Length: 288
Image (cartoon, rainbow, N blue to C red; front, side, top):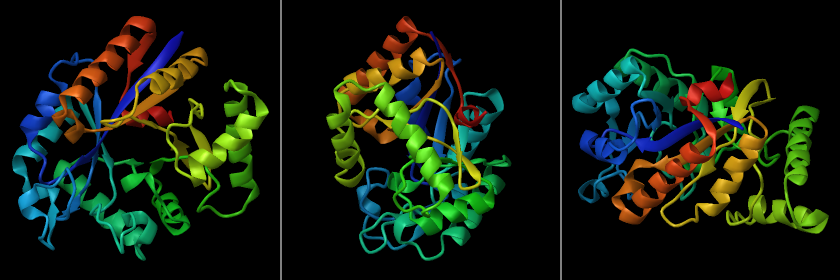
């Protein structure tokens, strides 16, 4: 069984210490690229990616001012160990909601954030990763206008009611039904639990391929947090491998501060390497 496997690491920003990234991935072979979803203008609010001493500051810190981090990213881009995606603009919460759910100016944020990141790194950015994995319909439309490829879900929520969206959604549901155990009753109940109730313990098999919707290309990733079990993730990976597909694991570098997470991450990587004919790829290759 052939498997192409990408590792997406979210939240890299002005405050990120290069040594923390190096410690997180020092045990990975050089042949395994890490795709960093980077915040170009990090807001100073309570978040694991921001030092506690800055939580009450109203500033937004441009990543280009962290010269050590920029040099690290440029070197990684040059040798193929790192790829970079755009992770919002500031990652702030607006009226308590995710940035690209509540922002009234998503197109400006995407363009300005992309321009800063490309200028700082002297590198083209082609993939967008939404902060908190959440988008409004307005933000989805803005992303498509820029030509960025998108890591998101084929859900009809916050999308226009069109035949295009319905087609992709039903294709995804058909795949989930074909690869899920439990019969049609649980299949009907599970989408409601997963999307409306946001119950991420629900196993909904991810279709391991890109899909075209709303005039652009998207791919669905699977998240690994400090607390969730890796067994459902292994099931997602198995489905991808059985279909000779692609898989993207979404994590956060600051989760490695937990020894438990560090141990489970490398347990999962070892499982993938020992079980499958795996090729580790940068995030851009998910869309090829």
